Image (cartoon, rainbow, N blue to C red; front, top):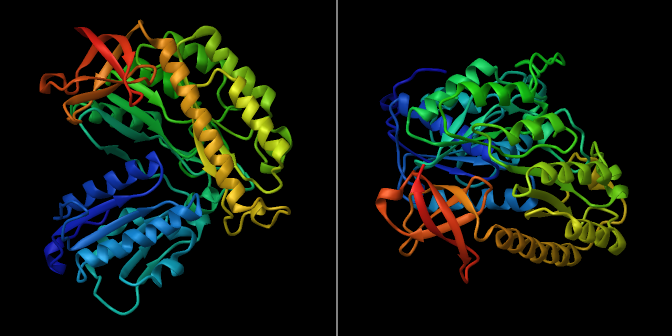
Length: 448
């Protein structure tokens, strides 16, 4: 990292806004720590700041639109502030962002971690400064972790993706698959644990592909299972959670290891995208529904109380009513716990964007709503199945109308009456009943 003195440019305060995934949050937090080391102090994004850093996503059109709205908000808060845009949208369309009123600096995938260096020489002008590498140059690995509260942290273990899903821009925005070393991940995990944080969520673009070298070579020095085993045995953090893993990379050995793990919790988030084999082939996914069903069955066979989350896309080009209902019935029959539903949106430079028979926007939204309703039904079924059972809850810090909330190890959202002494504590509880807001009330048994 470049070392500078922020006072040289009279820039002293910085505010951050993050769009998108857990990986973005981990990287924003790392950038923030670097700027603090270089003389900046962080303020709230709603406050007047010398610098505004917006870390962007570009998974959907809505993410692009939200970025533009956040730029406008920063400009209104402080017309003289410097606005810096980084992240996936910045890498994919740097000159489109540079044309936005108020943007001063655009940094791509390689440049965003040297933001302090680029701020040093930044001056207000009519045109934004753009530093954006060709994505082939993003062949390095930058460690990152985020600390959002006293309870949970996101730890980046992998970046980039070698898959070629026809709807996805991530390989264009983040480059080839590459990984951190196990030794460095262990060090970062203990760094996090030393700050009193009790849960780490492992994150990346395609974490099941972990093991490819930091320069994206095809040699697998380690596997994701080896990383899981080392973290389980050697780190000091009390609870570990896997953010999301592709079904073809979720091996039986990993599922079985989780069963007897000291630290890894029975919660899996497994992208599906479609419950229709015809569409999975058009998407160039690396599995069909039979394999997905097998993975879910394996988890539930050995961990009946495990929580399973699903990503699903509606409105992919050529999705007929029959295709959609195939997905609907597939999800309805599976013993999964909740969905993240995404409405397909055309992305430039992806094969799907030019496919025939696009689904009308109104119909895409209708299908999204149908699956979100089904998701809520599945979540309530899962919550009801957990009532009158004992679990370990890690309490969070926020006072929500006199209640404190937290998650069980198997990802049930629970609450009890707020007590400051509960913050960041793990406790044995009995799941008593579900309130009118769909949150589970608990009876505290004892502190772990």
